[in-house]
Length: 412
Ligand SMILES: *Cc1c(COP(=O)(O)O)cnc(C)c1O
Image 1 (cartoon, rainbow, N blue to C red):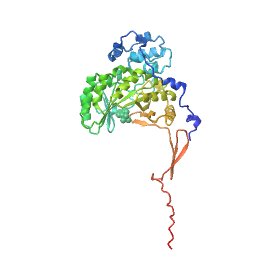
Image 2 (image 1 turned 180 degrees about the horizontal axis):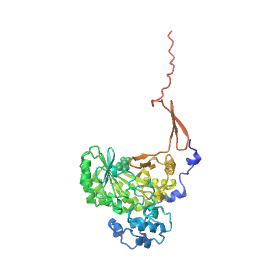
Image 3 (image 1 turned 45 degrees about the vertical axis):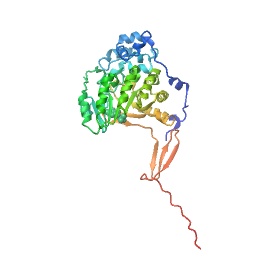
Image 4 (image 1 turned 45 degrees about the horizontal axis):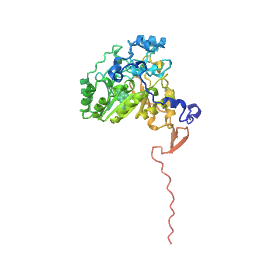
């Protein structure tokens, strides 16, 4: 049985000054770009054009660049490019070497340290591609990669082999072939657009794709995986929302890792998506220096609910080359889930998964709540570590009580 003291369950107070501070919604604001006009700042194309992509720009804005970051940034363009939108850059605390935002987007020399078990395609996607840019791993759904570009590049990207086009993968999806495969495969009822980031497309280009997919009778469900609402909330325009609305049922999975990413700008952008009826989910990656801490994750999931986003998955970091400095442990991931389940809103608890190395797909990993089973009961543990029994027959059928003897009335 789990010892309450070692796991800490039932002991954690429901709120603390640290949790409250992490949960505050703040504006990213204008920071270094105070003199830029409102029109430019709120124009997503302006944000993309003014991304921080070189060491010179980085050092100009942040004199506290460390030697590890300097060396990493110089090498980034041969592996996974650096790009940070001005909006997102404002979330970095230049005075804090351990800023959780900084670790996610500024390259480090550790990215060049690779172990034999780290690879460029950790989820075995290329071997599950019937046509380039389409990953068909699960029976009834496909991952449709539409672009190799993102608004900013996450340093632990599982698809860094192709994303940003820095390592010579030469990603050239042919939408006609991808759509053809889906059209000819009636088992596919769910299409997940990802990349790269699909919301980098113009409204027209994205609509062209969505309308072709919607025209396929067996495609019931569409979804988009995107980090744009976090990196570039300016992209979530009323025009985009009005277009997306026409393709329901359409879900969006966003990607946020730290509560500080949920700014007032992001909350507004997510609100615009929710207002056009798009159910929103969030995917996080468990990352050292960023969010492998129960209080940080709790603040994140609470803020997500306040933004009408359901925490969907939290991923163990894939074994992507050069990611050891960002990877946390499965043990820590399980502890974090333990700290949530039962202690807070069920809707706030994401499913913790490991995308099995080599291509086995997502495998759920859960703290153990079923302690044992025997001939007449299942023994379970609750969130406080208390033990309960549920009576059940060995074959899973309900146990039936022995019939009560009924006194027959005496006939006189
Ligand atoms: C994650 C993933 C999906 C979607 O999985 P869900 O559990 O349905 O969200 C589909 N295809 C691939 C290749 C994936 O990696």
